[in-house]
Length: 273
Ligand code: FES
Image 1 (cartoon, rainbow, N blue to C red):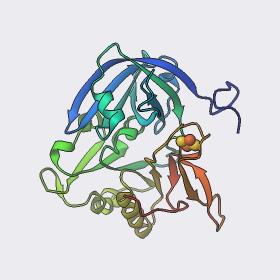
Image 2 (spheres, rainbow, N blue to C red):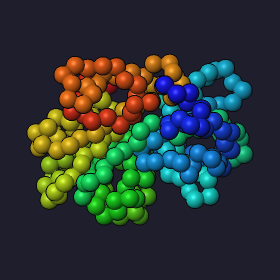
Image 3 (cartoon, helix red, strand yellow):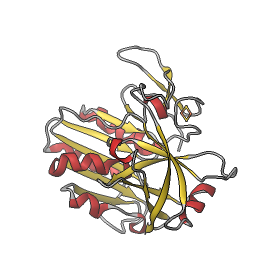
Image 4 (cartoon, protein in one colour):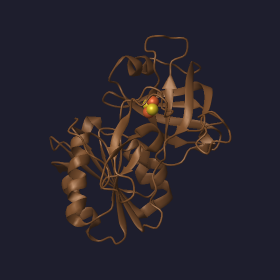
């Protein structure tokens, strides 16, 4: 593998120091952070991610992968995160002007070339990698968003602003459809030809979305939220099993380098939560 920081590497990565410009509470336990990333922001493609690390700290030592939610023409980049551990607790306390280490853009991103429409299926904060792709598809995109309760829902106005049809499902029925978001797939695709389904969220949702797509004969890509140590393809902490081309046998691939977006028909789904 060519060195990840070599400029001749087509997957070259930029390491930079970003400054937080905004850190906003957007839903229960959920924050949106904007930081300056002048060299990285213009290169980001839909579905890619960055690694963020708190500088000068050994605890937490490692960086954290976060999907790029949005970039701006003047070199800013937004990510959305759930407050779930030490790193994100510290992130949530960050104020404008504080520095963060950032490296990226990372991963392969989405490919929906040749499709007329896309259906994006998201659980938790799985909608965050989709906004840049939704912008490209405009009214030809549908977002099916599942959440535990309505207090957990964020970012839907940004999708509506770019023309996406948004359909919400909640576990407790507090907003939208009362039930599993995957139950909305048949209706969302019924009127559309040449539709690709793209999914991001917890493993059980990915498994059930894939099963639904298999039943309906639809192409299905999944974006994995695997834990990662380096994000650069070096440490192999993020491997999954995948069938290349038409091969019958699985081999290990790195989610950070070969993914995070994979064809669900070739991926060995795990029973992880
Ligand atoms: Fe290190 Fe993927 S996180 S190889």
